[in-house]
Every structure is written in C-alpha cells, then in structure tokens.
Length: 293
Image 1: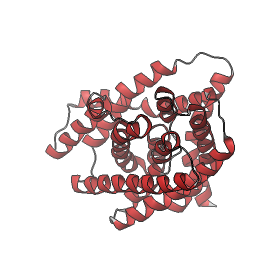
Image 2: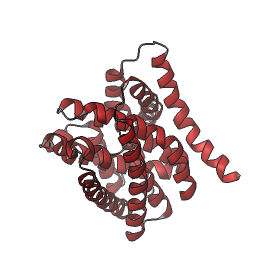
Image 3: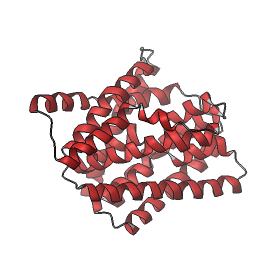
Image 4: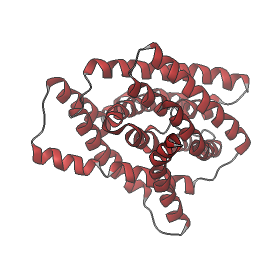
C-alpha cells in the first residue's frame, strides 16, 4: 500500500500537468507551442542542466560510466528495433527512430526528479543531453538519410551540458546571485515541458492505432529490459540504474512526429505512435517505477 501511494505521489504531478495542457487546447484557448518550446529549450532547460551539473555531488567517473551505459543501451535498442521492424516488414524510416528515442525531456526528466530528487535530476539531465545528441545525428540520419552533427553544437542545451561538465570538473561555481537567477529560470523548465506535452498530444491526429499499440507495448518492455540489463552490466548505482531505465523507456517524443513531417516519412503513423505510446505510459511507467523503487 505504501509503495502504491509513493508511486502515485511521483507520477500524479507529471500527468496532471500534461492533462492541463491537453484540456487547455481542447477548451479552445491559445497556446503558442513554437514560442513556448523555444523558450524552454533555449533558456529554461539549459539553465536547469547547467545548475544541476555544476552542483552535482556525483563524480565525473560515475557520470562517464552512465554515459557509456546509455549509449550502449540506445545502440542495443536500435539493433533490436531494426530486427523487429524487419520481421514485421515495417518502414524503418518511419518507425525506427521513434522506437529508439523516447521523450527524455518532457516526461523522463520530471519523473527522474520526482522519483529520486536532486540525484535523479542530475543523472536525468546527462541522459537528456545524450538523447539530444543522438537524435540530432543518428535520429535525423535514420529518417532523412543524413545527419546534422554541426547543428548540435548550436543547441544551447548541448552548450549548457559541456559548460556544466567543465564547472564540475574544475570545481567552479557561479556567484550566489547568478546561481539563484539560473536556478529560478531553470525551475520553469519542467512545468512548461509537461504542459506543452499535453498540448502537443491534443493537437496530433493519430492513425494506424492498432500497429501503434503493438509497437508501444513492445517498445516499453524491450527498452526497460535492455536498459536494466546494460545498467547492471556496467555496475551502475541504484539511482543511476533506475533513471537509465526510466529515461530509455519513455514514450515516443513529439519531435519524432516533427522529423517525420519535415523529411516526408509517414507522419500520420508516427503521430499515432506518439499518442498511443504516451497513453500506454500512463499505466506502464508507474508500474515500471514501482519495480525500480
């Protein structure tokens, strides 16, 4: 009973905030998703990442191990996903990138924070940065046949990660007034991302729901199993292992739909994958979290 209450206390704020965004749009109110997303990804999230890394008590060696574990997990998920899609004779350009990369920002980061506090947030931002780098390179290549390595260097989120790692390595800290300012800006990130997730899901028009249900269930199970196995193989501590499993197992991100739309993949099918996997995560992620606590 206590475990159930704990899980509900962790996941309820996440899904309530997303529901607010969903209802807001359905009620006909304006929500400029492009502006809000830009505000979050160029200002709030970079501040959150930088301050979390600068103040972390986890040593660089442990974060390095977590990084290698995450890259290995993504590679393994990609290999299994490619085999699975080939067996089902499904289009790799449409489904493989969404199968590999989850919603580590809008959903994974809040869950890591609410479940494991500051320690979870610190590890979560590292995995968010890794996911972003892989998405901008390998993810785009899978959909469009070409990557964009130089584009990631222009992303404030990546710059904040590198700068935060530098401050952590050197033991530097910003002056208190600046730290407080950056932390205050960073505190916007999680509620903004969750509300925006609800808005984005409300605006998508899903199709091929039957296929999306099967793939969503397989994605959740396969990603969780692979992340847990690789985390154990790398000897991660309990919090790092749990955050790795949560982040790798998150549902398909809305950015997968935007990439499919931009590069002429089957965007309607990806929209169905986004919506269905997000809805399945409402039940799947709390169950997974209960196993990890």
